[in-house]
Image (cartoon, rainbow, N blue to C red; front, side, top):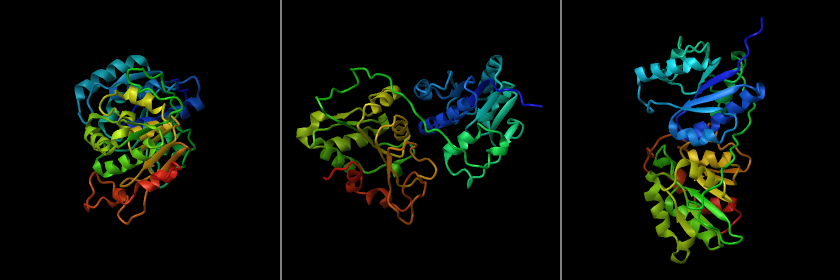
Length: 342
């Protein structure tokens, strides 16, 4: 007897920007197998601009419970509301127990996900993860598109690919005729250990400013101090071509600005994954994290990392206090990728 066809899927999406970008590879896999399938994604509201730029997603549904909050009654209420959508399957990407509650409350017949926090009962299509067989996060996401019998083999996947929307003139600094644009993303939500020193960013910025480029800094309000340090080190006669937009753009504006870049230089961050999905030439700077788990998924992304005995440590702050994985990675390594010399 053949299995019932899946026509409508609810994805419980991840909370981090970079993870949501990589989740698009799952959406692509589902569409490749069944082009007519409807994919709705339940996720935190700040990920909506990403989902709006993914043609595979039919509807972005806002999660009413903040990240890290249990919210039993709110999850139950939303689950009962979603029951009216008559989903055939739910795929739960986060590993937490509470993330599986809403599909269970909604009575969705097939509830798929990795075992995570012992979610027996909440999930009825539960998979045991083999981390060696599936070392990359994107592989773990995409595997959930296929039957459990295939969960132990690394699947092929299509890289995320988002098309930018036109950028409003009031947030898009004008370029001079023939001028190129470098975008710097010097922040990292994970913690300061992932941040290349601001003085190194400034040295690269000065090199390209001397060659007539425009340089833009993107980031959140939390990155404004870092951006200010970079701007302070920019040569005074180039200040007019250095534009600090950290904390001054919404995520959707930052996404679309990244689509205008000739080069992007970024720490391992959500903006790095967005730049990769925009297919922009990218230098991704890695230190305490591993490229084996969450690399930028683009052929024109260039990873820069040095090999030292304590890296990757996956710590938010350098446990040894020297931060060598970033401090020993000098500007020349990045400029070589850009085919420039200081």
